[in-house]
Amino acid sequence: MKKAVCPGSFDPVTNGHLDIVERAASLFDEVIVAVGVNKSKNRLFSPEERIGMLEQATAALPNVSVAGFTGLLTTFCQQQEATAIVKGLRAVSDYEYELQMAQMNASLTRIETVFVPTSPEWSFLASSLVKEVAAFGGDVSGLVPEFVLGPLLEKLAARPVE
Image 1 (spheres, rainbow, N blue to C red):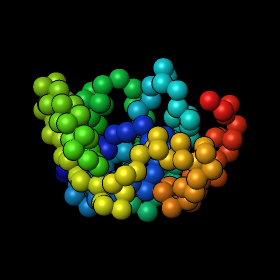
Image 2: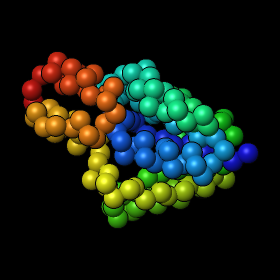
Image 3: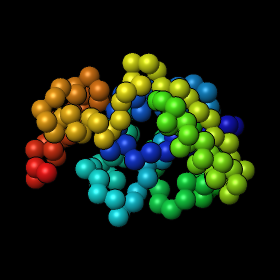
Image 4: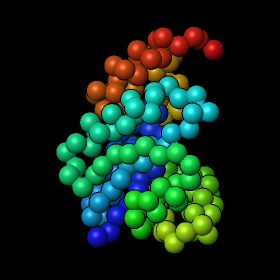
């Protein structure tokens, strides 16, 4: 059985993330969406909220599960007995960073990184950009799952303006 991990912060989950997860689910027997939990980073959504949103977003994919992790991604992959890490690439700049990470991960453990090019319709999409546009009143309804939009707008409205 081929098992892969799709890691990320998913703050919030976007349609671009889901595109990569869905495509990974068609390539592997099992996919674990791994939500990075880093208490020192200031996230909009808590780890529990991000995991819950991803569970809802992937509910129709029977071979996909969601889990949080702390520490090294390679350690999590070993614990899960995953053989691959799946990373979406939006642009050349993503490739340069992700290649370095893939090589570091491979030096730590025997895990392969599979790069999946983002679908053109989502190639510009990043969680940070979604948050910024939404914070200034832009319409992001087509960029995130419908059930994410309300909580996203509520959280942004409650934040102090910077």
